[in-house]
Image (cartoon, rainbow, N blue to C red; front, side):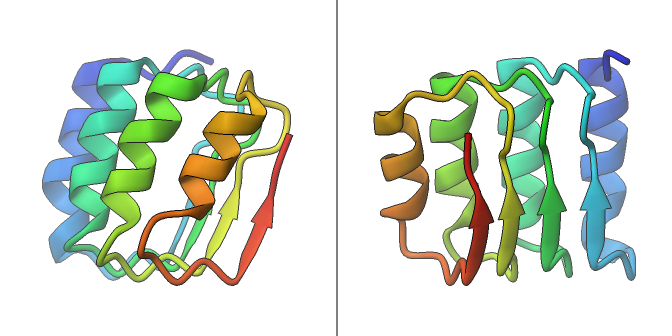
Length: 105
């Protein structure tokens, strides 16, 4: 299922005020723009568990996500079965976030 940039934008607008701590967007075919929008919202949200496996994310989306994780509450990240290179995974893990568990491709 493809998640449109508009639906991610609507989610991102409401995420900071919500009580959501687990967000599952697996198998969603997120665009790079959608990931960037989501990443910005993570900084002020309560999300601790983020499941993005099989979302067809690549290195560009991973880079945006890595920046969004800085200062976020996310401690669990599932990026399994995406099109992320080893460099993309290293970038995701090298930010200043407190990821304690991560599933990688």
